[in-house]
Length: 246
Image (cartoon, rainbow, N blue to C red):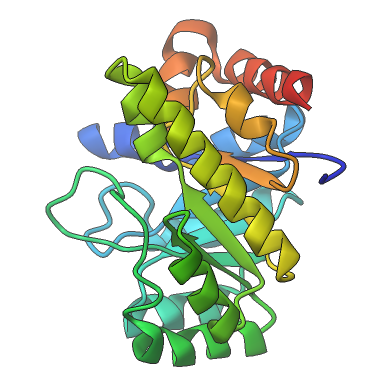
């Protein structure tokens, strides 16, 4: 079991609110500082092709604002590779990206895109950036991560979250077992397993209880709850639920 389940806070949607009106408020840098102040373990930010939330200029400011590691979510493109190499974040999580999607839906097909991903994963690793692949909890995708020599995988938990919302508890339990088995398989093969997407106060604990998981990345829900209870309290409550599950 990972001794401490880390909480990475995705601050994208602070930037989404800022961009809705233009200008500089609310500033995602302030959100990063709050995450650090209340015990978050890392900052996650997704620089999308269409720049719908995080902007290029945010990356340096976020990295300068706290000592927390930055996990840069990025598509597997030459543009994003160059941006990552220019900034050298602690980690880069390669995610699938489609212009028309509201948020990242589903995991990366690491198995089907091996030849495209291999040079990108290699260059990021050579630069000292810890590479993560955002994948479905499938043995085939884990095997691809092994071949790509990715040190980390992040399992997409969106299906688990949606099944619970739909009231399909049996399906959600089956998906939870699938995530648990995938985490065990990754850890057995020397890959550090993370998880994220769709996690809330109500559904996080069964995921947090999976012993091999080392980190959860949560963003949209925490920023949404911050409207009602404040970002500090939102993060503290999630942290407490995760600790309780362990």
